[in-house]
Length: 100
Image 1 (cartoon, one colour):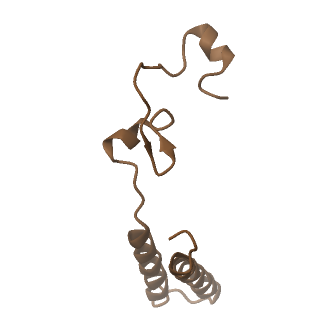
Image 2: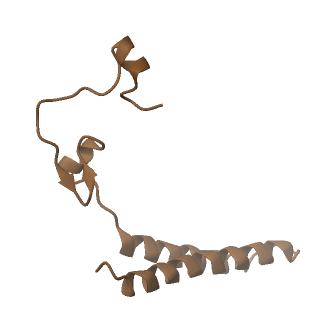
């Protein structure tokens, strides 16, 4: 349900509207997300890619352990390949982006 729906407006709830002009940063309005005014509305793509590779490495390191069955190994390898592929795909998509 939208925050400024008629049902909420009747009860007095909803979003308080101020008499100030909205700030728009990277297509995000401060009316939608107030934190954009303070500069806290950023993304960290390099950190996210690094974290994906780090998680993949940690999953592969977990292959050495005290488990006996191969089912755990299969899951660890498949998930590591998935994280690696997502991180690598993000790098390729960023380099070949037509919006840069």
